[in-house]
Image (cartoon, rainbow, N blue to C red; front, side):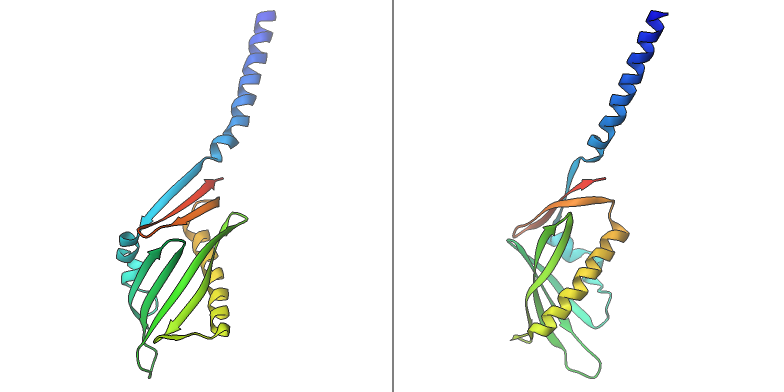
Length: 154
């Protein structure tokens, strides 16, 4: 009987240890990388959601992303727009901030940049809620050729 009791105690301890180790495995850090070429060849860039956008190009630069496009609004001449975006990881989320914008070479007003930043933050959060696995971002690194995101899955 003593052997059965010891065996049971060992099994309970092993099960408890295994269950307590599961969260550690779930917290494994992962990375994914997108190259500039993959981004520019993606469906969202080659076929923008808004029909008013065309010739979209994404240029990765150290620490920032520059997006240029042609904007054709109704009854207006086409305009070349360029936006510079810088990412920041805060509380497990990535926040993109537009730091500069030009329309046909002229700087955009600070009010317009603020409006774009407000719209951008909500759309980015909604995109990740729909398309990403649960987790927390820990880092984002942008070089001339690729964008690497590190996250911890839940």
